[in-house]
Length: 172
Image (cartoon, rainbow, N blue to C red):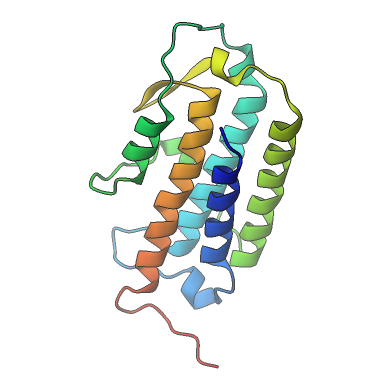
């Protein structure tokens, strides 16, 4: 996988939360919808956990050479917002960062660590798979495609919130 995809998703997510004031950060477009802070916390949590999984449990999984990889299918499924998915309980945001900038810094730190590892590893990411609860077993490269697409899906959700009725506009 070209790391540019992860870098572009990183940049899009970081830009989506940059400069948000406390009212914007906590804004939720509707009663049954997550606030921008909750969306961002979810993205950061998923990103951190997948990064850790790729460097540990994935590489401990049995070798699976018979897998036909399909990053394109993973991207298509994640980037389509035609269906709504409820986050697994462990990825539901609960301890939200106090500010957008704090969460942004934490996210960027974890992403930098993952990218650094990916640039220098010779780990056989294609040879090992771990299950995703809805997509089935994914190899390491498919998990990376999932990670980038997941972030872009939620960037779109954040951008939708910013144009929703009631979104607080900062006056300068």
